[in-house]
Image (cartoon, rainbow, N blue to C red):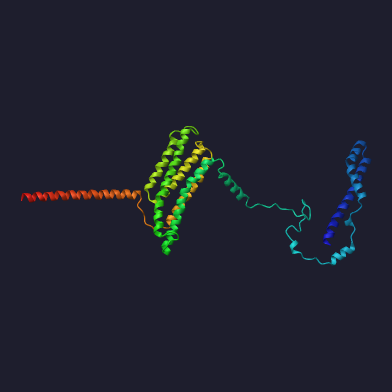
Length: 346
């Protein structure tokens, strides 16, 4: 009854307001026309109000009433005696709200929000950045092949370290014995450090070639300095212990990448060179980190082979010992000679 009564009362109010509006305009207008001496103002007033009043009268004559004005008593009684069935699923925040700007009974489809849109955009940006489509294929293939030996030595270091640990715990390795794995590890040490020094020297020499070609103009000593500093840092690492040598080369690769990136910004190198160098430096840097992690796991389980610095130190010590030995022999000969002369005089 509440649902049927509310629309009916609203409709009756609107109908009553419409009928009042149709009867109301003519009374003041006619009175104004009779009391006014001039015909022109009254005609203007009637002309201004007559069209709206006529439309309201026509609507009232053609629409005498609506369906809500006739109350169906039987239906009202039947609805009053019926019980309202509970439907909790149909009750929501919007179930008792009449929406003005959309059709009733039609659910508005909400646009699905892609929660990973930002992540997908970031991944697309990274993919486009490192696609290396502008890099010449020859430089890309040869450069990637050039970092494979460095990556192979790092992975071999990790495996040998794992095999040495397994042999220390169980008494035998998986594929190699502990002594064999340690020997191979010591063979890989100078290979990895030496190859890293070669790569650093090659990366520095690229700037000499660009300067000779005049790419980006002739920069003179500033560009030549990059090619000189790279090998000057790389080759002394051969004299350091293995861990210190790897850390020094890691810093050298990052420093040289920074110099190459700055050169690319200044136009001294092709635009794609900085991204190309980043990819190669990332692979080499990751290989160095992997090697350091692998060696850190077996630092107390392997012996240390003498490096170049150790050999130089041993050579210096042996030379000192030889000099002392020669001095002692010379003094012994002098003493023996003096003793012989004393014997002859007696």
